[in-house]
Image (cartoon, rainbow, N blue to C red):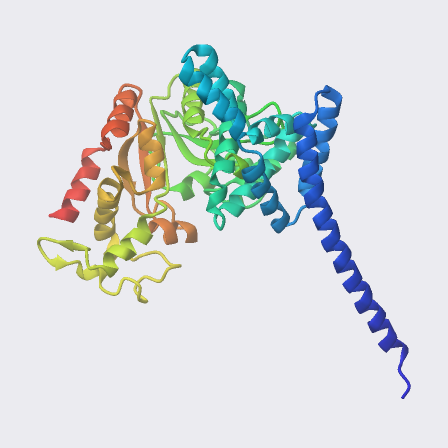
Length: 441
């Protein structure tokens, strides 16, 4: 039987593929061992030049690892690069024998995991901070299935909080003259209201709008977090009008509406900048535009519809006058599909139960809704619930189309913050209280 050339080509291709797979696996194993050796060498190194070189090679080696290799690297950080037990025991004995500042400092130094020093050394590499943020993002991806790696993440957070504390952050106004590279990042990172195109971005940077971001000297072209602001007459209740309304450069604005705040770096999850950003932007705007009398948000209610469905399923959407809410019977039927706005016949009931959700649905003593927790912790007041404030598909699926105004009142923000943090007390307007009361009547 004669075999064609195609047959032999297939055989050769399969053998080559199998051989390359073996080489790839071997290369992966080599890289995993290489990075461990580099970390050990980096921790031993004393020379400044050698530290920088080793740091760069370590970060490059990590970048070549696949997901499995990265998990093994984090296991190495957990198992081998914690605190050294003999040194910790000796320091603890010394402190117990002589509890004074010197032995306390030695004990604190001995208790620090060596992986913290490794992160500091890796940060000496050119562009090291950016790569360490990528490393933390990979660690966050691994944590869901590997909760035992949490101590490693705690050390990342500890180090990153010191590197990204408020003293190092720079507030920049972002406008149409900002370098295109940064503007592209604004489009990419916008997390609340998607930027559709460059024209959409241009509208958000017009004379009746403002955008500010925090930057870090080690990442000059990477916003860490940014906020978008609309200058308005009175409270705004519709994000559609803010995003697509006509430009009014001569608006006699008395209110600044913070309508979007976006965290940009996944590697900085858990390191909060939002409260600092809002407070500094309020100061900047008050200086620039003395006529501003009110600072408020137009915020989503991301957990509302999920909570509402759960309440309906459990039969808890009731009122004292009529028993079960008749308008909510069959809430997941064709009367209100997940991708369409609820009809006007649901308005009163949804507004009442939204107020109840914001004031009564709790996680511990604090609101269940994450956006509410953020603004109330910062001292804001829950002011107004807006029907169909966001009729976009995302707004409908998360918030049943509604949005909330939180107001930052300089005279009460400190007292509101203290009451919320210490007692879980929610500062809110009479209008919101009346809605919640109607839901419970």
